[in-house]
Length: 311
Image (cartoon, rainbow, N blue to C red; front, side):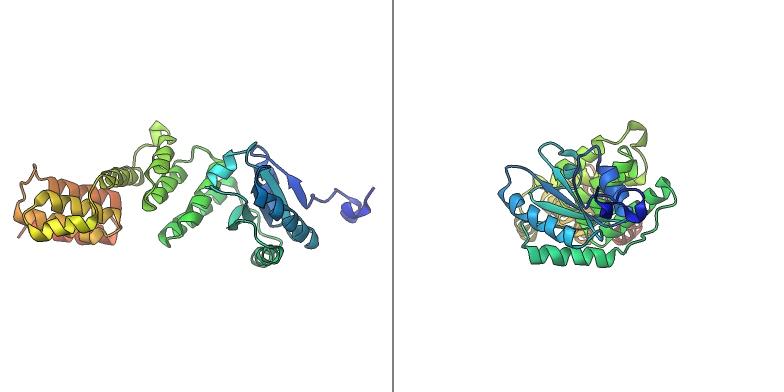
């Protein structure tokens, strides 16, 4: 018997390196990372770089003598968690601490870079991370952090945090809406639609849900339009080409130019409010719904609309 594996003569210490699965992910990674940081190595037998990276990570983890652990997951046999985390190429290594993802890297890092990565994770996630008071508290905190990441433009981290919520509650509507919203902002319509499809019928309501649905619809419309520069040229050549101006507004919105989109629609209304059964006004209201009532562009756009309607 190895006495070193029996701290204080009691329960055997957790292994520093272990194979795991989608089913055991919560216990082996989420729960374990409340005690010490955990690196998750997503790999596959056919992946050459994985065979290079694996021994380097194991060596570094063993050097740290319990300050950090390694969990290896074969994505051929366990694709679910890798999919939730957005893994598209391997090797992919995610660091978890305090029950949530904190960092990641893709590719076969050399041993020195793996060591530096592990040192940073250990330094930023010291031992003794407080355990959440309750699952509900942890989910609330994760959703808040995901929202902050989204607002800051860190879309990858936002998706990771929302995915972590879904590992606890696979039908959590705010997390599914958040993931959909994040993919829409990234211009990826299909994964956004897939997330919305997972929302229970009873939860398909409310300002946040309606906003994402409207934004997804607008993203789909924009994908079928001519390039923005071409539409700008049409409007410049003929300011009364209301269809081109309408399309330009939709294209601007897809590029994140919200105020410019609102301005184009208001300009169209000034020239011909009745065009195509008030299409510009209706589209402007769709934009407001997609952006949300508190968005600065919605507030400014409503002012422009009010000034036109009541002038």
